Length: 336
Image 1 (spheres, rainbow, N blue to C red):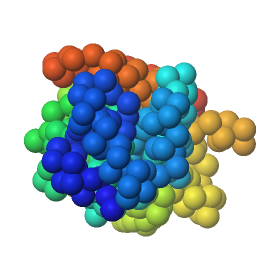
Image 2 (cartoon, rainbow, N blue to C red):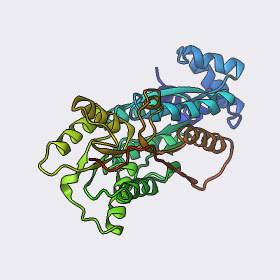
Image 3 (spheres, rainbow, N blue to C red):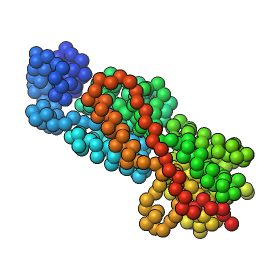
Image 4 (cartoon, helix red, strand yellow):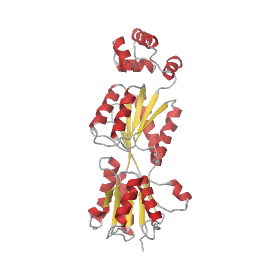
């Protein structure tokens, strides 16, 4: 027995069953009692839901992220949970591992849950299946917030950072240190961060009269292994770059893994700037120049937007774009 079958037997919509399970007041006593009788008869409600029916404990919020190993998303989740704990919400977390099929599965699974809201960082912004599944969730009463990335065809509140400016500033910092052979290890163009960072990078080169060469642009897919392989490809080429701009922290770690194997010293043998700070590197006395973004704040902003959306009848779409900061620690210096 699932929520769809309960709704069919009760002669109501799934959204009405969900409202009853969440303790909402906008359902008539007659309908509410019929639904609760069916839930009791077929033993539908899981223990957590059964408890919520009796003591009004908090409902659930879904969170879908693409890479739990990425410390950026760990910090985002920390910010989200800081708000949700205060509001007495529980979190259902899914890690899609940057895989669209995993994302589709998570969205279908969450449709069968009792959710007040969902915060999601989608894998790709051009995913018609995810767009349709999100639309279905929204029609079922789930409030949805996008964080860091979005999906074409689906409008919702969003929390982003200024990816273009971050990439532009990082590239200019390398140019000002006399680099002209600057490579970029890029992310997927189907994600907003990957696309906007590439635009910022290319715009900075163009504005400073530096020829853009395709051989210095390699997609690392936001993964450690992608960063490693891209760095290797760049540095074994006949005309290697003197500087690399890595578009995310995971690929930066891949870069540094290759540097370590080849005994390269950043800021001396090769210049490197990464997008996203990597805190533990400072513990190892590795001075990496970075574009830092307010990761925990992104999570708290997204969660606060979601809570406000749940508690209000607002129909408008809000978009927050948070600033980034260029932190220079010496790794941007000109190589030998």
